[in-house]
Image (cartoon, rainbow, N blue to C red):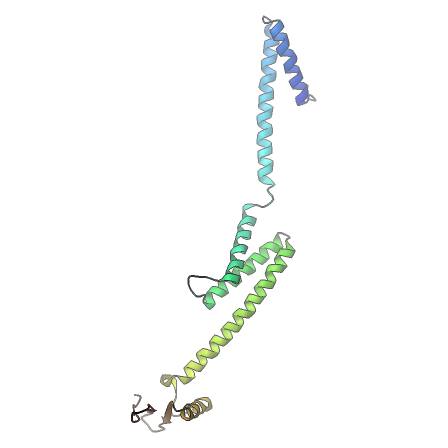
Length: 203
């Protein structure tokens, strides 16, 4: 019957097996036993397929979530440890920050707000360090350009350039003499111990 349980089917198969042993010539009993065994085998196979599909659909973490967790772990490792093979550039740090921000958004979508908040704090600290590095690098580049004779307008030097000349003159390194004439030349007088000053016009 439709309401029969697995235990009922097993009991019926047991009874039919005993009946077949007692009456081996009874074809009707053998046919019924064969049908019940086939149905039980088919039911077990269907149950196995159903459970496999159920577990496959209700994984605690799907592949996308696992990939995001692995990416988060890689990002945190790079933030805290850096690369041992070569120095990290500002571009590397910017890429890491964007990857971490994407991981934060993924955690929020998954409802893992505590993990997202924890990673967000690390991203913000990483951003602060990156901004500080960029600011210092920009200041260093500006200072280097200001000191580069090839980039100086010798007909109209800036106050910073004039002050730098005065400082370097006082420390005995060299003296920059601005030529405001049409040739716009710069004479470099190098003060070297034991040697006379060297005049080198910059063309």
